[in-house]
Image (cartoon, rainbow, N blue to C red; front, side, top):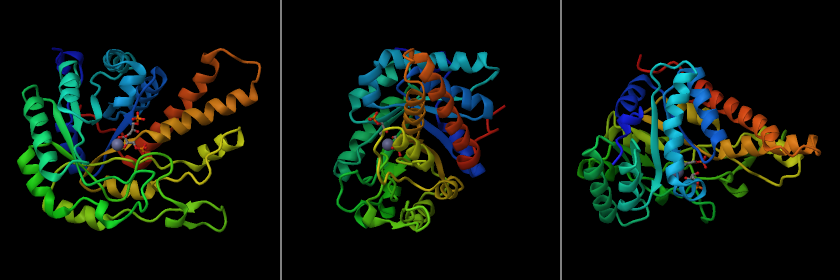
Length: 334
Ligand code: G3H
Ligand code: 13P
Ligand code: ZN
Protein backbone atom coordinates (compact mmCIF):
# COMPACT_ATOMS: atom_id res chain seq x y z
CA UNK A 1 0.00 0.00 0.00
CA UNK A 2 1.45 3.36 -1.09
CA UNK A 3 -0.18 6.48 0.30
CA UNK A 4 -0.31 9.39 -2.15
CA UNK A 5 0.60 11.84 0.62
CA UNK A 6 4.01 10.20 0.86
CA UNK A 7 4.48 10.92 -2.86
CA UNK A 8 3.76 14.65 -2.44
CA UNK A 9 0.41 14.42 -4.24
CA UNK A 10 -2.84 16.00 -3.03
CA UNK A 11 -6.50 15.02 -3.35
CA UNK A 12 -9.11 17.29 -4.94
CA UNK A 13 -11.06 18.37 -1.85
CA UNK A 14 -9.43 21.70 -0.99
CA UNK A 15 -8.69 22.78 -4.54
CA UNK A 16 -12.31 22.14 -5.59
CA UNK A 17 -13.62 24.13 -2.64
CA UNK A 18 -11.45 27.09 -3.66
CA UNK A 19 -12.31 26.72 -7.35
CA UNK A 20 -16.07 26.70 -6.75
CA UNK A 21 -15.81 29.72 -4.43
CA UNK A 22 -13.43 31.53 -6.77
CA UNK A 23 -15.33 30.94 -10.02
CA UNK A 24 -12.63 29.06 -11.91
CA UNK A 25 -11.93 25.44 -12.87
CA UNK A 26 -8.98 23.11 -12.32
CA UNK A 27 -7.55 21.59 -15.50
CA UNK A 28 -7.64 17.79 -15.72
CA UNK A 29 -5.22 16.75 -18.43
CA UNK A 30 -4.84 13.11 -19.51
CA UNK A 31 -1.33 11.79 -19.95
CA UNK A 32 0.14 8.71 -21.60
CA UNK A 33 3.67 9.80 -22.38
CA UNK A 34 6.66 11.46 -20.74
CA UNK A 35 6.35 14.46 -23.07
CA UNK A 36 2.74 15.06 -22.03
CA UNK A 37 3.71 14.79 -18.38
CA UNK A 38 6.58 17.25 -18.79
CA UNK A 39 4.43 19.72 -20.72
CA UNK A 40 1.67 19.56 -18.09
CA UNK A 41 4.11 20.16 -15.23
CA UNK A 42 5.91 23.01 -17.03
CA UNK A 43 2.59 24.69 -17.81
CA UNK A 44 1.27 24.29 -14.26
CA UNK A 45 4.49 25.62 -12.73
CA UNK A 46 4.76 28.59 -15.08
CA UNK A 47 1.16 29.61 -14.42
CA UNK A 48 1.20 28.70 -10.70
CA UNK A 49 -1.86 26.51 -11.22
CA UNK A 50 -3.06 23.42 -9.38
CA UNK A 51 -3.39 20.57 -11.86
CA UNK A 52 -5.00 17.14 -12.17
CA UNK A 53 -3.00 14.56 -14.11
CA UNK A 54 -5.32 11.80 -15.12
CA UNK A 55 -4.78 8.26 -16.26
CA UNK A 56 -7.35 6.32 -18.27
CA UNK A 57 -7.64 2.57 -18.51
CA UNK A 58 -6.26 2.95 -22.02
CA UNK A 59 -3.27 4.87 -20.66
CA UNK A 60 -2.60 2.08 -18.15
CA UNK A 61 -2.68 -0.44 -20.97
CA UNK A 62 -0.42 1.68 -23.17
CA UNK A 63 2.18 2.91 -20.72
CA UNK A 64 1.93 0.47 -17.79
CA UNK A 65 0.20 1.48 -14.56
CA UNK A 66 3.32 1.35 -12.41
CA UNK A 67 5.31 3.52 -14.81
CA UNK A 68 2.53 6.12 -14.87
CA UNK A 69 2.44 6.18 -11.07
CA UNK A 70 6.18 6.76 -10.92
CA UNK A 71 5.82 9.45 -13.58
CA UNK A 72 3.35 11.26 -11.34
CA UNK A 73 5.79 10.99 -8.45
CA UNK A 74 8.43 12.33 -10.81
CA UNK A 75 6.06 15.15 -11.77
CA UNK A 76 6.03 16.41 -8.18
CA UNK A 77 9.83 16.32 -8.00
CA UNK A 78 10.09 17.97 -11.43
CA UNK A 79 7.70 20.78 -10.41
CA UNK A 80 9.86 21.46 -7.35
CA UNK A 81 13.00 21.42 -9.49
CA UNK A 82 11.34 23.99 -11.75
CA UNK A 83 10.94 26.29 -8.76
CA UNK A 84 7.48 25.49 -7.41
CA UNK A 85 7.91 24.96 -3.68
CA UNK A 86 4.46 23.52 -3.01
CA UNK A 87 2.99 22.05 -6.20
CA UNK A 88 -0.62 20.89 -6.05
CA UNK A 89 -0.73 17.85 -8.29
CA UNK A 90 -3.53 15.29 -8.22
CA UNK A 91 -3.03 11.82 -9.69
CA UNK A 92 -6.50 10.79 -10.81
CA UNK A 93 -7.96 7.65 -12.35
CA UNK A 94 -10.13 8.66 -15.31
CA UNK A 95 -13.24 6.57 -16.05
CA UNK A 96 -12.59 3.76 -13.60
CA UNK A 97 -15.05 1.03 -14.52
CA UNK A 98 -14.84 -1.33 -11.55
CA UNK A 99 -14.27 -1.35 -7.80
CA UNK A 100 -11.16 -3.49 -8.35
CA UNK A 101 -9.55 -0.98 -10.71
CA UNK A 102 -10.28 1.91 -8.33
CA UNK A 103 -8.90 -0.05 -5.37
CA UNK A 104 -5.79 -0.97 -7.34
CA UNK A 105 -5.14 2.72 -8.11
CA UNK A 106 -5.81 3.82 -4.52
CA UNK A 107 -3.45 1.12 -3.25
CA UNK A 108 -0.68 2.24 -5.62
CA UNK A 109 -0.78 5.95 -4.72
CA UNK A 110 -3.53 7.69 -6.69
CA UNK A 111 -5.00 10.63 -4.78
CA UNK A 112 -8.33 10.66 -6.60
CA UNK A 113 -10.39 8.17 -8.59
CA UNK A 114 -13.39 8.32 -10.86
CA UNK A 115 -15.87 5.51 -10.74
CA UNK A 116 -17.91 5.77 -13.90
CA UNK A 117 -21.15 3.90 -13.34
CA UNK A 118 -23.05 6.17 -15.71
CA UNK A 119 -23.97 3.35 -18.07
CA UNK A 120 -25.46 1.26 -15.24
CA UNK A 121 -29.03 1.41 -13.99
CA UNK A 122 -29.40 4.20 -11.40
CA UNK A 123 -29.45 1.97 -8.30
CA UNK A 124 -26.46 -0.05 -9.54
CA UNK A 125 -24.52 3.16 -10.17
CA UNK A 126 -25.27 4.24 -6.59
CA UNK A 127 -24.21 0.88 -5.11
CA UNK A 128 -20.93 0.73 -7.06
CA UNK A 129 -20.08 4.38 -6.38
CA UNK A 130 -20.77 4.01 -2.66
CA UNK A 131 -18.56 0.93 -2.48
CA UNK A 132 -15.67 2.89 -4.04
CA UNK A 133 -16.30 5.92 -1.81
CA UNK A 134 -16.30 3.77 1.35
CA UNK A 135 -12.92 2.30 0.41
CA UNK A 136 -11.36 5.53 -0.91
CA UNK A 137 -12.32 7.69 2.04
CA UNK A 138 -10.46 5.41 4.45
CA UNK A 139 -7.31 6.74 2.78
CA UNK A 140 -8.55 10.31 2.20
CA UNK A 141 -8.73 9.67 -1.54
CA UNK A 142 -11.46 11.71 -3.26
CA UNK A 143 -14.01 10.15 -5.60
CA UNK A 144 -15.63 11.50 -8.75
CA UNK A 145 -18.86 9.85 -9.88
CA UNK A 146 -20.93 10.29 -13.03
CA UNK A 147 -24.62 10.69 -13.55
CA UNK A 148 -26.11 11.08 -17.01
CA UNK A 149 -24.70 9.68 -20.22
CA UNK A 150 -22.19 11.54 -22.33
CA UNK A 151 -23.01 11.08 -25.95
CA UNK A 152 -20.58 8.90 -27.84
CA UNK A 153 -19.21 9.60 -31.27
CA UNK A 154 -21.48 6.96 -32.75
CA UNK A 155 -24.69 8.05 -31.09
CA UNK A 156 -27.56 8.91 -33.39
CA UNK A 157 -28.48 12.16 -31.67
CA UNK A 158 -25.74 13.67 -29.54
CA UNK A 159 -27.61 16.42 -27.73
CA UNK A 160 -30.80 14.55 -27.08
CA UNK A 161 -32.49 15.63 -23.85
CA UNK A 162 -32.56 12.12 -22.42
CA UNK A 163 -28.74 11.95 -22.35
CA UNK A 164 -28.51 14.87 -19.97
CA UNK A 165 -28.12 14.46 -16.23
CA UNK A 166 -31.53 14.64 -14.57
CA UNK A 167 -31.38 17.46 -12.00
CA UNK A 168 -34.08 15.75 -9.92
CA UNK A 169 -31.68 12.83 -9.26
CA UNK A 170 -28.56 14.65 -8.12
CA UNK A 171 -29.41 15.26 -4.45
CA UNK A 172 -30.36 11.62 -3.87
CA UNK A 173 -27.28 10.42 -5.78
CA UNK A 174 -24.77 12.67 -4.03
CA UNK A 175 -26.25 12.02 -0.58
CA UNK A 176 -26.48 8.25 -0.88
CA UNK A 177 -23.06 7.74 -2.49
CA UNK A 178 -21.04 10.33 -0.53
CA UNK A 179 -19.08 11.13 -3.71
CA UNK A 180 -16.85 14.22 -3.63
CA UNK A 181 -17.63 15.50 -7.13
CA UNK A 182 -20.08 14.72 -9.88
CA UNK A 183 -19.49 14.51 -13.63
CA UNK A 184 -22.61 15.58 -15.48
CA UNK A 185 -23.85 15.45 -19.03
CA UNK A 186 -24.91 18.76 -20.58
CA UNK A 187 -23.94 18.18 -24.21
CA UNK A 188 -20.18 17.61 -24.17
CA UNK A 189 -18.73 14.38 -25.50
CA UNK A 190 -15.38 12.68 -25.92
CA UNK A 191 -13.09 12.90 -28.92
CA UNK A 192 -12.47 15.30 -31.80
CA UNK A 193 -15.89 14.86 -33.42
CA UNK A 194 -18.27 16.10 -30.77
CA UNK A 195 -21.13 16.96 -33.08
CA UNK A 196 -22.32 15.77 -36.42
CA UNK A 197 -22.45 18.34 -39.22
CA UNK A 198 -26.27 18.13 -39.22
CA UNK A 199 -26.34 19.27 -35.57
CA UNK A 200 -24.27 22.36 -36.37
CA UNK A 201 -24.51 25.42 -38.54
CA UNK A 202 -21.63 26.38 -40.82
CA UNK A 203 -19.71 29.66 -40.67
CA UNK A 204 -20.10 31.01 -44.22
CA UNK A 205 -16.70 32.77 -44.06
CA UNK A 206 -14.55 29.85 -42.91
CA UNK A 207 -16.72 26.88 -43.83
CA UNK A 208 -16.14 25.60 -40.27
CA UNK A 209 -18.84 23.95 -38.18
CA UNK A 210 -20.48 25.99 -35.41
CA UNK A 211 -21.77 23.60 -32.72
CA UNK A 212 -25.00 23.92 -30.73
CA UNK A 213 -24.65 25.43 -27.23
CA UNK A 214 -24.24 23.37 -24.08
CA UNK A 215 -27.33 22.93 -21.88
CA UNK A 216 -26.55 25.69 -19.38
CA UNK A 217 -30.14 25.50 -18.14
CA UNK A 218 -29.53 21.91 -16.96
CA UNK A 219 -26.30 23.01 -15.26
CA UNK A 220 -28.16 25.84 -13.50
CA UNK A 221 -30.84 23.41 -12.29
CA UNK A 222 -28.18 21.06 -10.92
CA UNK A 223 -26.44 23.93 -9.14
CA UNK A 224 -29.74 24.94 -7.58
CA UNK A 225 -30.23 21.41 -6.22
CA UNK A 226 -26.65 21.06 -4.93
CA UNK A 227 -25.36 24.54 -4.12
CA UNK A 228 -21.57 24.64 -4.09
CA UNK A 229 -21.15 20.95 -4.90
CA UNK A 230 -18.15 20.30 -7.20
CA UNK A 231 -19.28 19.59 -10.76
CA UNK A 232 -17.06 18.04 -13.46
CA UNK A 233 -17.22 18.39 -17.24
CA UNK A 234 -15.80 15.59 -19.35
CA UNK A 235 -15.35 15.81 -23.11
CA UNK A 236 -14.29 19.44 -22.95
CA UNK A 237 -11.67 19.73 -25.64
CA UNK A 238 -12.32 22.64 -27.96
CA UNK A 239 -10.60 20.98 -30.94
CA UNK A 240 -8.54 24.04 -31.98
CA UNK A 241 -9.07 24.58 -35.67
CA UNK A 242 -5.52 25.83 -36.28
CA UNK A 243 -4.21 22.44 -35.08
CA UNK A 244 -6.77 20.60 -37.21
CA UNK A 245 -5.74 22.71 -40.23
CA UNK A 246 -2.04 21.97 -39.62
CA UNK A 247 -2.76 18.24 -39.38
CA UNK A 248 -4.78 18.33 -42.60
CA UNK A 249 -2.16 20.47 -44.39
CA UNK A 250 0.62 18.00 -43.59
CA UNK A 251 -1.00 14.77 -44.67
CA UNK A 252 -3.74 14.24 -42.06
CA UNK A 253 -7.42 13.81 -42.70
CA UNK A 254 -9.72 15.17 -39.99
CA UNK A 255 -12.65 16.64 -41.87
CA UNK A 256 -15.25 18.49 -39.79
CA UNK A 257 -13.53 17.84 -36.45
CA UNK A 258 -15.34 20.05 -33.94
CA UNK A 259 -15.21 20.70 -30.18
CA UNK A 260 -16.71 22.83 -27.43
CA UNK A 261 -16.18 26.57 -28.01
CA UNK A 262 -13.82 28.01 -25.41
CA UNK A 263 -16.23 30.81 -24.59
CA UNK A 264 -18.69 28.22 -23.26
CA UNK A 265 -15.98 26.54 -21.19
CA UNK A 266 -15.08 29.96 -19.80
CA UNK A 267 -18.71 30.44 -18.82
CA UNK A 268 -18.90 26.98 -17.24
CA UNK A 269 -15.70 27.61 -15.24
CA UNK A 270 -17.40 30.51 -13.47
CA UNK A 271 -20.11 28.18 -12.14
CA UNK A 272 -19.83 25.15 -9.83
CA UNK A 273 -17.95 23.40 -12.64
CA UNK A 274 -14.55 23.08 -10.99
CA UNK A 275 -12.85 20.35 -13.08
CA UNK A 276 -12.63 20.39 -16.86
CA UNK A 277 -11.28 17.34 -18.69
CA UNK A 278 -9.07 17.85 -21.72
CA UNK A 279 -7.40 15.04 -23.64
CA UNK A 280 -8.14 15.37 -27.36
CA UNK A 281 -6.64 18.89 -27.59
CA UNK A 282 -3.33 17.51 -26.34
CA UNK A 283 -3.45 14.75 -28.93
CA UNK A 284 -4.15 17.29 -31.66
CA UNK A 285 -1.36 19.65 -30.51
CA UNK A 286 1.12 16.78 -30.43
CA UNK A 287 0.10 15.32 -33.78
CA UNK A 288 0.03 18.70 -35.55
CA UNK A 289 3.56 19.54 -34.40
CA UNK A 290 4.94 16.11 -35.32
CA UNK A 291 3.29 16.08 -38.76
CA UNK A 292 4.58 19.54 -39.55
CA UNK A 293 8.08 18.79 -38.30
CA UNK A 294 8.43 15.54 -40.22
CA UNK A 295 7.00 17.05 -43.42
CA UNK A 296 9.49 19.91 -43.19
CA UNK A 297 12.46 17.71 -42.19
CA UNK A 298 12.11 14.51 -44.20
CA UNK A 299 15.72 13.55 -43.45
CA UNK A 300 15.34 13.63 -39.63
CA UNK A 301 14.71 10.44 -37.70
CA UNK A 302 15.74 11.14 -34.09
CA UNK A 303 12.48 11.14 -32.05
CA UNK A 304 13.87 13.92 -29.86
CA UNK A 305 13.87 16.20 -32.88
CA UNK A 306 10.13 15.94 -33.46
CA UNK A 307 9.02 15.28 -29.88
CA UNK A 308 10.57 18.54 -28.71
CA UNK A 309 8.31 20.79 -30.81
CA UNK A 310 5.40 18.46 -29.96
CA UNK A 311 6.08 19.00 -26.24
CA UNK A 312 6.39 22.76 -26.78
CA UNK A 313 3.11 22.87 -28.64
CA UNK A 314 1.29 20.93 -25.91
CA UNK A 315 2.77 23.19 -23.24
CA UNK A 316 1.55 26.26 -25.15
CA UNK A 317 -1.93 24.74 -25.37
CA UNK A 318 -2.01 23.83 -21.64
CA UNK A 319 -0.93 27.36 -20.66
CA UNK A 320 -3.60 28.84 -22.91
CA UNK A 321 -6.30 26.68 -21.31
CA UNK A 322 -5.17 27.51 -17.79
CA UNK A 323 -4.85 31.26 -18.31
CA UNK A 324 -7.45 32.11 -20.93
CA UNK A 325 -10.16 29.50 -20.48
CA UNK A 326 -10.25 27.92 -17.00
CA UNK A 327 -8.73 30.77 -14.97
CA UNK A 328 -6.75 28.58 -12.56
CA UNK A 329 -3.50 30.54 -12.95
CA UNK A 330 -2.09 31.96 -9.72
CA UNK A 331 -4.43 29.77 -7.65
CA UNK A 332 -1.96 27.68 -5.65
CA UNK A 333 -2.74 27.61 -1.93
CA UNK A 334 0.39 29.46 -0.83
O1 G3H B 1 -12.28 9.83 -21.57
C1 G3H B 1 -11.48 9.44 -22.39
C2 G3H B 1 -10.10 9.96 -22.38
O2 G3H B 1 -9.90 10.84 -23.48
C3 G3H B 1 -9.11 8.84 -22.39
O3 G3H B 1 -9.10 8.19 -23.62
O4 G3H B 1 -9.29 5.77 -23.07
O5 G3H B 1 -8.30 6.54 -25.25
O6 G3H B 1 -7.05 6.85 -23.12
P1 G3H B 1 -8.39 6.74 -23.78
P1 13P C 1 -11.90 15.23 -24.68
O1 13P C 1 -11.96 14.07 -25.62
O2 13P C 1 -12.90 16.28 -25.06
O3 13P C 1 -10.55 15.78 -24.53
O4 13P C 1 -12.37 14.71 -23.23
C1 13P C 1 -11.46 14.10 -22.34
C2 13P C 1 -12.13 13.48 -21.17
O5 13P C 1 -13.26 13.71 -20.84
C3 13P C 1 -11.32 12.54 -20.38
O6 13P C 1 -12.07 11.91 -19.39
ZN1 ZN D 1 -14.08 11.56 -19.86
